Length: 201
Image (cartoon, rainbow, N blue to C red; front, top):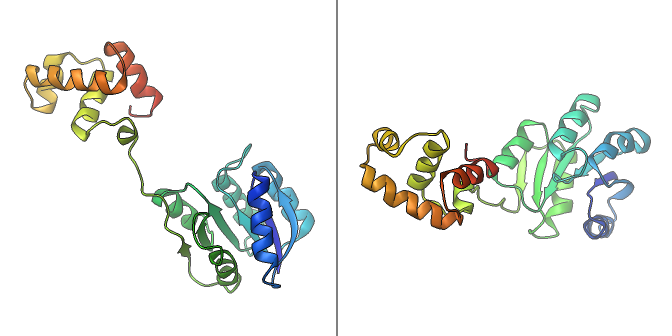
């Protein structure tokens, strides 16, 4: 089976090539080191299947997946990624990938996924994806503190925040103190900037 590998890490490419070719069932006929190379390599090499990383430079793996589906609708694609979460896996499925393989899983998952995809079986996940984390969790904020930060970023006063969240002004001040401490900021302006930088608003 002729394979196109798409990954921007040379070590990952070498490892995947070794795992696949050791089975005697797969031949790597082309490699793409960026998203923009995937379609040209597919046209040149005429592979039977594509193994695609999600986090590619120049063109994200999801965009590559869509374009492959449009131009090569019969070409099966297996997505292999190290840090995809559950939402990414669902996006991969909706865009027509035949399987998802987590890089932290068993190396034997890779040829198994490739065989399954080539046989046209239903979408399957090999290796559990990372659990989805909210941006506020990465900042150490509780859901209540995150909600307060979003109202703060809209320019509301303490009284207006209290009215919207059904809490007293004293409670607003208490939560704000905690939010400032966790974000490492001194005032509303700095807190608002952090909220925007982390996609909370």
